[in-house]
Image (cartoon, rainbow, N blue to C red):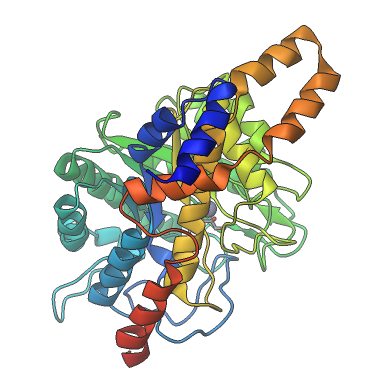
Length: 415
Ligand code: RNT
Ligand code: ZN
């Protein structure tokens, strides 16, 4: 233990915080690591561009182009990050035998066997996502399409994904969070807003009519306010998805903090939803001016979100997944900065004297609350964080980038 940690630990102890207990607690809380930061959300089907209103920008060399490369990159990222991990895989990352191909409505658990093996070898669970974009049948509307054949295709895809999710959960021993997000919507003012939403509602109901064990598969619905090319209307708006989850037993609401108006804060929405839902899910990202999916950093709102989860004693009620993609910088570093930032935010929340601050609020001591909240911000948190990294066997903030540089030289630059 460093002298720096010992000193910091005693300062926190004066405020009633046990930093060793915080470190031990955080070590075991899984955070879902999204496979799509490694290849700009392209997947393995040969897609050349994204669709659905989402976008990566940049062309940094070294993008993973096949399963072996992507898994090697994820392995590298995990070696740089403290804490427990879970994999987050999209259906467009199915792995076929040589010469084999099946369309998304026909996907089977065997097409994800390599991911399952990868997770099992490392004692991790997997979260899964049907992919309702970057496909010839995803031209505008998918599950909310007026074309019955299109809708049917995507419903079959969703059902296939329920079966795959259950297989992943059974194999790994961890529940699989299966998130339904579509980019369905309109660029310009629609003539019918309710029709697509009624079709979307029925389509999700059909998907979830596929039998599954609710302890193994945790279906979610993710909302969105707008996307590129769908500026005027999204079928899966916030009210739509939240109402859907609230009225369908076993379905969770998923909030992506990039999917709201810029002055809306997810940190305030987390405790609101926890009053009603036994479990909720998050996509954690950083929007710069729009849903830009910048790499997550240790900024105020990220800290505030983590604080709410901890203060609400909800670490076991919130499924936390990262969702950002930056193709303009080294992708391994991008991945690791985001993962480490969320770990940092959680550790910082666990080292916040929440009981003391709450007490001030309840006593109506608002002046002192403001004073103490400001004081807490400059406690020597860096020393606790560095100790946490050391105990997890990973390098500290100033040292890990050298490993990325070495990997870039020996692996990425050769692709
Ligand atoms: C898009 C949504 C969605 C995707 C992933 C790839 O705006 O956030 O969650 O980012 O499914
Ligand atoms: Zn998301």
